[in-house]
Length: 390
Image (cartoon, rainbow, N blue to C red):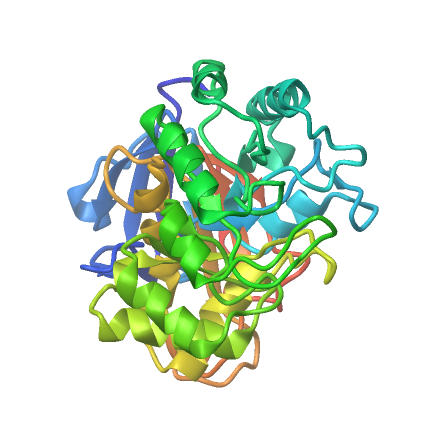
């Protein structure tokens, strides 16, 4: 994109910030230049002249693009786990503009020798850096650690551009002391780690209980509500209380356990630790609306304001993952979704409808200041649809 390209979105009915400290912003207009947010507020106070792209939101709400903190991509927009092409594009139509890999584990013949796993991680990081399916930002190249890895291997990975570890516990490293050593090496070189939590998810994985999670001290407690099988309630509560790392709740897990983890985080006054993922593709398939469904479920059954639940899937994740998106503030990437109450859905407005458990309709997605999709083919139709004027 040209650094001077100017995007103006006018007539916004509601601005969701993605930030827990102020989840709703005043204003009706947003201006982005060169793919970055330049101003948010009221049209009369902003420079809206001479836009290259002009969108009339028609009263729809604007939210940061949703971030899926836990996916398992393989290559391009294809997953052999479900023999499905275009799954990332489908998730874009569910409002997801950024994805974080928890390991490219579903590649047939995935190498488990150290040379091979390092090569695969570097290649995966490169191909998603060079190819963004439908514009979606996929942060990938997340090696599954195996027995025999040494500190130099993590240094090599970091120097090659790898910034993530795949789920600790999906490979041969399952003991807490060994995981702790490798997680520390990864952290030393700027590589963020996620640990599998709960029962086995794929052949070769195993039970990772609270003792292993606590000893390993990974940066993210991956799918604390199980992927798919959750730990006992007392272990989930213990992890929330005894560990200060990210509390990741996923669609492909135990919903009752998800509510327990979220409520415990609020009881601890640590809601900023809660982030959302789908853990897809998985045995239960691809969930294009998985993040929106988690927002609606946690808001309705967990009885929290919908605007707070949106923060779990945007600003919380962005801050924890060190991303330049997920928040509506100057200088951040211009990654948005325009959403509204689904047609004929109950509720006095969109947030109330979501709080009652209903999905909103996605009317448009924007990534780096560029329109990527119009009316969603997957969500229920929105009552008000934005229109591209220029």
